[in-house]
Image (cartoon, rainbow, N blue to C red):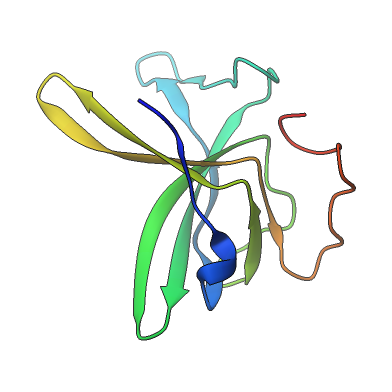
Length: 116
């Protein structure tokens, strides 16, 4: 299915609700999930997306550890996409970002950064 881009500028705030943790690919062996494009470990971060009077928490995957991102911290998210999925009668939406960084951190120069 197609990845649907999400305009994060429409949110009034994005806060880290669950700190970054590496994603496990195999629970029996403890093997971590690795991004096939970059070879970096995939991390999952719970983000609270706030818009007006509503807020939703979504788990977002990102290649490489989001340095400096901590619980309760406002963050900036680059290239957030949502991908609908279905497998063996289950379905949902997977969220992925090119980068998650503390809001106060300097912006990544164009052409540099996660996934590039």
